[in-house]
Amino acid sequence: MTPLKILVIDDEKLIRWSFDKQLAAKGHKVYTAESGREGLKLFEKYYPDLVFVDNRLPEMLGLEVIKEIKAIDEDVVIVFMTAYGSIETAVEAMKLGAFEYIKKPFSFDEIHIIIENVISKININKEIRLLRRQQSDKFTFDDIVCESSDIKRIINISKKIAKTETTTILLLGESGTGKDIFARSIHNESNRKDKPFVTINCSALPETLLESELFGHEKGAFTDAKNMKKGLFEIAENGTVFLDEIGEINLATQVKLLGVLENRNVRRLGGTRDIPVNARIIAATNKDLLKSVEEKTFREDLYYRLKVFQITIPPLRERKEDVPALANHFIRLFNSQFGKRVQPIDEKVIQALVQYNWPGNVRELRNVMERAVILESNNTISIKDLPREIRDLKPASEHVNNTYNFKLPEQGISLYDLEKQVIEQALQKTNYNQTRASKLLGISRDTLRYKQKKYGI
Image (cartoon, rainbow, N blue to C red):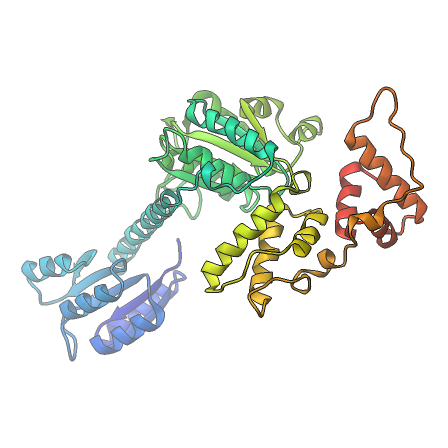
């Protein structure tokens, strides 16, 4: 059972003591008050999830307490208690916003049933708020800041895919490249834009909880399953499910996910019937899924089922022309957020930003600009406002080795192999001293480490 913060307002000491003893034993946090005024003070201090209010109270009636609590928080759940009230009084309490009423004397079995119903209501309200918040975030491709021809080409392709009825899309790219923004833009430019967009980070949840979130569960499916819960595929009916970090799910969940893709239905944990679903699935990962397939950690059939349309978003270091536009975009964003008037960056700062290779991609650039806007003192960002790994880089011209005469082989060479060879030579020349090699190459040591890992050096 989900633990709640519960406030009990009743002038009878035995009632307050019983609530505290019975509900605390179930893991709930219980606050008690003997008068309406005291109850209102505790409510404003702790903002409980659930309030039990007696009608006959010192100083003010329970009906008045309900009215004042609802003025503070209209979403809080209130249960009205009375030993004297008529049906008319109970109806008045419900009109004021009470969720339920109960007549004294009552058993705590009744109270526990009410609490289970309240937990269901709270969970449903959370889902509704989540969907409303996600629906209000209408990010589209027109909001993506870019100058790169590669990104513009990918956007054009993504716009076409968004308009199709295909149900599966696979987004590939390093962490921080903006896969979540592409997923949201695809949804918001599709025919599903007025339906839910729900997202889940597959690496952020334990295996058992991930299955429950994706597929839902029936009441009693496992120890804590006190109520039925819909999974994301049901919640996103006719909309979009965004599965971030899809490469992290285990093989058992992969089998179930494959079943959803092939049969277009789900079966809740503990359930006995299949439920038809119609949601577009957009999956994203920064892993090499083909390598995972070879290593038998990702199912080959699921991989090919996901990549009906595959979109690969290039890292920021391969589209340096986007750096100035993005940097100034983030300055405008944080000016608005922090109430500042920082000017667009000058050429010297632009050169420093473009020189850096951004292993953390757009997310790292955003964080750097946020830091710079916060630290600036005269509405201008200077080199000193940038992190050490960026401001200490020498201009590219200072790293040119005029004695290095590369001759392109007749059969040609890929840029991938060329960069790998140059990094290997720099490491060999410095006896694998990463600090000296990174200076020789004109990159940060973190970038060098990233590239060593990338090329298996």
